[in-house]
Length: 402
Image (cartoon, rainbow, N blue to C red; front, side):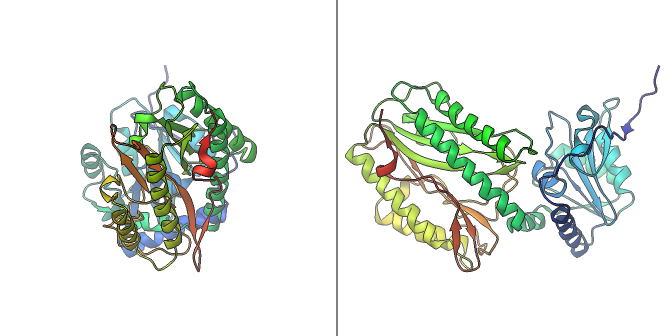
């Protein structure tokens, strides 16, 4: 009978083609080590999906097991459960796999990779209370220092390679939107519309980025009452003539998020609906004009709030006016320091990528009831911004024949 092991080194198969160049990944690790030096950290133990992905090009699937990326001045090692066998190694650099023979072997692995260190960086915004306690016990007497904020600042400025990937994803989102719009018809269920968009995007990702992992791309079709919230799930509701419809397409390439969101109507839109749609489009166009370097996020929100107030719909606004892009998804990541909200002081810089996505919701029972939302992606340039979303918007394009 074999001997139970706590750790194994698994190198199975051949390395796959990475999402980014070796120079790009080296640049990221160098930036991380600069943060470590500035905060007097001997090591960092990253545990979030976005943190590990950004610095290793490996996107994990937790399924109840923790993952880590341990970076020191000399090494970078993914700490992964043995259940994934050779997959982490094929995608990234050094990997230490831990087994399920004992509880909490992950934390023993973190200690073996960190060694003796006075200060260790971790992500406070990702660790649970239990995870923080176990990691602190394993690395004692080291002091755990929060590095979530400084690392978010690194991710907010995109490299040329990252921007290239996001531009490609925006193009694919437009294709998904076209497929969804073509699938809209009287009596067609929301889920059937989204299947058309998701299929189109997955196939285009496979064609244009054949070395990418095919995972996580999705679409939403929110019609009628289901349009009132930004993140309402797809249902079996059938779309009818005169319904408001929100289309949402989200191609995911290597864990990088992109989005297209549009307001449509099937057949016709009544007078009240056209009025609210027009107001939201006016806010959207003003917002696009405000995206440029040197402008604070809170000032953009303030200017758009004034326009909403002028039209009497400020109390119908449901969330902030936009957010950043990068290694985020609906279940991981968020660069909260780059959101177009009243409480964010971040100044836009060249290389940032943000959305403009105003939304207002009119409650059921009122004329024009429903949610109105548009969404474009903008790359901040040296002297302004570049809109990389091409899907048309407005009544002249998006009132769909039944």
